[in-house]
Length: 128
Length: 251
Image 1: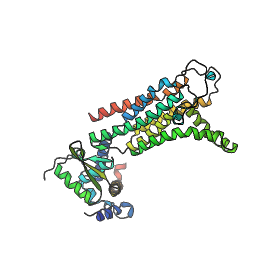
Image 2: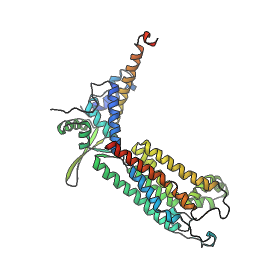
Image 3: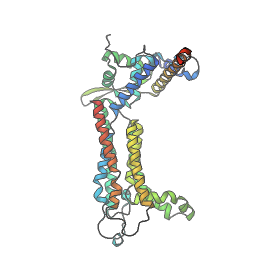
Image 4: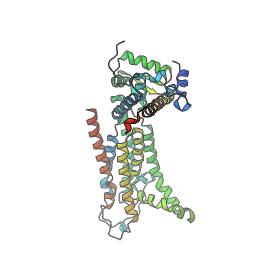
């Protein structure tokens, strides 16, 4: 997925009309990548070890998801050292924030639509 | 590639379940990131340590020579016997306090793996300290060296602010500004509640001084000490509760 694709997906939000699923991005909607972006949006920087523990992922799996998000310009990866220990930090980009917000909005819109449809299709007998 | 069972959002979940998972992750990260108990306790202690400088001697204020304090001691005010010492103390304590909390957040962030953005907090603290030094000079100029229309028109703001400054309580406001910025950065309702109570205490103490028509002998040598110390327990208690709550959540 290219960064252009990610931007297009983020722009196709529920606010732009159409079904709310149009606002879901393949890059962001993947459960682990959604988790990574959610955590990264909560902080200035997040260490890879924290992400691995919080999302209960193997190092290889996490690395692949991070590569996808970095390629889509949704996160920046900073490699450095703390003393002699190598540390890798993740920072969410402005595009990442926008894509995450669009995803959450699309999910909320889907939820509302689902609840509206559910209450509309409820038999009248239940209300008596 | 094998993958362990995850608490991460699952794409097969309903939107409601996905949103609940996202909220749970957000809360968990926030708890790990929160470290505001230390700035609360630190500034509460710095306030308590300043206590002796707010105590007046038994000598009548009318018998004291006029003070000609250096401009850098503006945070100590003008009314107090030890205004200059108080000014130097608060200048060092505020800058040291903000830098120490910056170091604390960096250390905590590295230890837990989640860093809080603290640049705006430190900028607010250091800028607040500098404004606190310049403000008394600007207020006196507005009140005494401008046209009557200007000085009268602005006296509703200059008089109470100058009162706060003269009682050596501008540092309390500088701390409040820094903590309010920190509450926003930490996205913490708990810290916001503590800061609101603290600001309310500072404002109430100063309203009392502004509105009470003191007669000679009404103020004791401990009056300014009580005024300056009253907000400190709010920070100390708030910080201690935050520390205990944090330890419970993370254990």
